[in-house]
Length: 250
Image (cartoon, rainbow, N blue to C red; front, side, top):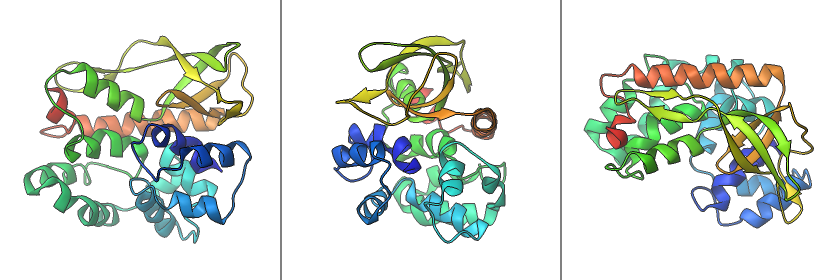
């Protein structure tokens, strides 16, 4: 199931979703899409409401429709069907009481500026306000923001130990805004115990990365969409009078 490919890496680390990462990996690797997996996915309380929001705005009855899942994690035209009113109401329902009035007012200011129910907005524009990242040293919160987003990379080599060497662009903080730094090579997991998320990859192909994993192969359309929506949501967040990342990076 497509959702599980992207949801497994943070679930393995205990950051979101139910405590069932071994089951999730097994079912994703087996391409299972059954009732057990669907019940498991509903436990991802960070992502599930965004899927419901996108599906509702698009007239799609199943929040796990592949088009909806792709819209949230990678990006596609369904995101543009979610109007600012619906987006604002969803954020209000979920986060006003969690972050406090002052922080919520700053968070919701991004909605008329173009915030969309894309995973990158949740990482850049919501996550810093939730109190889960500590201010002070910049390197650790910046690392979390970078690894938590879905990033794109080009496969340079497949190693013999179930990993891939991937060239990607990390996040950088220039003191005022988040931006993408120069490309650098990283080592990402392809398989654990013989089980993987992305299927077969070869050098030269583009892939999506989440935390320490390669979670999917990207075709040209998906690569362009992930770039477009990620950079667009970065612009939305950076343009705020007090950008959310400044709460933990400034």
